[in-house]
Length: 162
Image 1 (tube, rainbow, N blue to C red):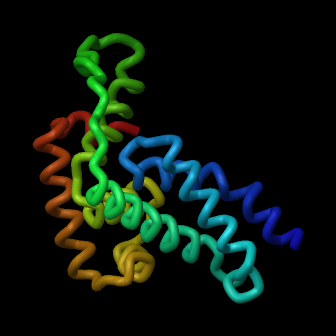
Image 2: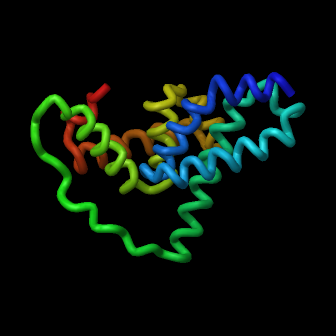
């Protein structure tokens, strides 16, 4: 299964980033769902090795949605993280990145998944629709609403962050 090992070695960092964003910035949860997805992929590798990236993204989106469903049934008390830093220094890119992750965490799970796949994983509307099992119109409307909500939460300037 050298090809599976190669896939994991080459794509695990990008998939972890996707999982991190889908989990609303919870690194531990992102690592957990990625590990679960990769374990599931190992057993199905012969069937999915023609398009493992698409399978992994779909599985991550589903695992993150399931995680949010479980949390909704068993709510957790959030930690008081204090005020978000507002200084404008050389560390502003780090602050902006944190703002984006926090704002993504505020979005509904489907909207978050659409934005993560479209803008962080750079999938087309059609690829995003296929990955999430919905129509292109849904992707377009969720993108539009999601970007509008992100602008409300963090402003236009931060959304153009690289």
